Image 1: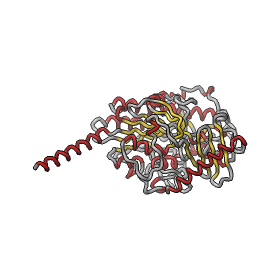
Image 2: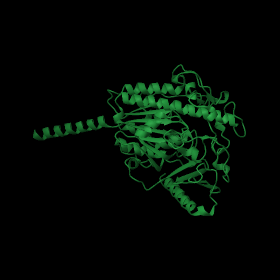
Image 3: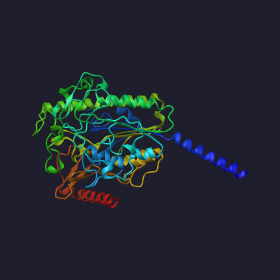
Image 4: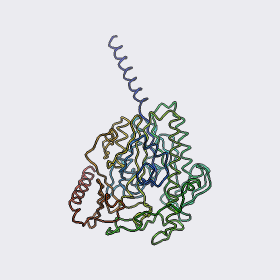
Amino acid sequence: MKLIKTAIFLIALLTSAITITASERMNVLFIAVDDLRPELGCFDVNRAITPSIDRLAASGVLFENAYCQVPVCGASRSSLLSGLYPTPDRFINYYSRIDKDAPNAITLPGHFRNNGYDTHCIGKIFHDAADNESHAWSNSIFRLDWHRKDEGWTDDGWRNYVLDTNLKLENAGKSGNPYEAADVGDTGYNDGVLTTKAIEYLNKQENATKPFFLSLGYLKPHLPFNAPKHYWDLYDEEEIKLPPNYLAPEGVHREFLNLGFGELRNYNLIPKKGAVPVGLARKLIHGYLASVTYIDRQIGMVLDALEKAGLADNTIVILWGDHGYHLGDNEQWCKHSVMETAIRVPLIIHTPGKPGRSVTNMVELIDMYPTLCDLAGLPSPGHIQGTSLKPILNGKTVEEDFAYSRWQKTESIRMGNYHYMRTLDHSHEALFDLEINTIETHNFSDHPDYQSIKKELKSLLQQKIDKIITSL
């Protein structure tokens, strides 16, 4: 009898411990922003008005040198959410899906769901909303979708989103303009509705029995640059300057550049060939900045709701952009290159109780998967290839301090002040010294003073590639 009572006591104690662990587990607010450049108030270059993101950065860790692995939505998100690096045969373009390229991988939200989290998707997280849907998300999902016509696309591409609301479609695609400033409230465009849905979800969490992993994916500032007029009015278009490197860089092979920028040329007003006229370029930048400020306001409302609901003290907040974005830099628009502007992204991680600060470590978006596992106290799946940023968040230094990216037939490595890139067949290369040439206008790959650092970077790049291939 005594043994039975002891056993019952131990089982009760263990059950109690498990319950306490589950109830105290940290929530996660996972905020993705499409096409977001690190030109926010919290960065050195800060053209955009972003008080909400700045507030989050002040209370969290701002990674000043974070890099995507592929500068296009589908492949970047697939790499991040699977925890796997891209290869020449995996996560290569806009259409990439995890369930096609890496069907055995457990996705980031799927892993949290498997460990007792309510994983809720609002907006764009996976590039294709159907990718891993049944495995990644719990029952309730509010997402953007698009009309499927030929292999899932309308004539205007995926830009014409349809919400399950009565909102009008955004003016976009081959039949529309690349920007719009309608005199409407925040919910007059799609991202404002996403904010409303996110706040509704947070307000229901007071009596929740599970921790949540709320994924909130904003579309803007993706083309078309549509935002309510009052956000446009915050900027004086006459004062908007073109980038100082509004010309193609010297001695850089075209393979490294996106001089065609077909994504933008799909819209009205954009010339089908040649450079974008200066006046139109200024209008596009104006629209991009207005869209960023519009999204900043949405993020601020969600953060306010998190606090009002009493959830802020137990919620990890992570804000990230899926890749960078050219706004005339090096005569380029959109993404689709391994130049600095296309691969560098904002990344902010707020952990309750930790002081806010900025760090200059080179980190990769693929690091988010193991980092969130560590912060939430979950084991990391064996397949993931990133490195947890928890030591950096705790103030420690790390040995590996470089970032790898690839696009189509090119690959690059960023370390310290240097950026080295080469074509996959090794026929062309480029080396930039960002300390003396921050805007990447001059290629130093053949300069005699740079041969030693070029050799080191080439070696690091090859080691990274070999490591990725070995893990396949």
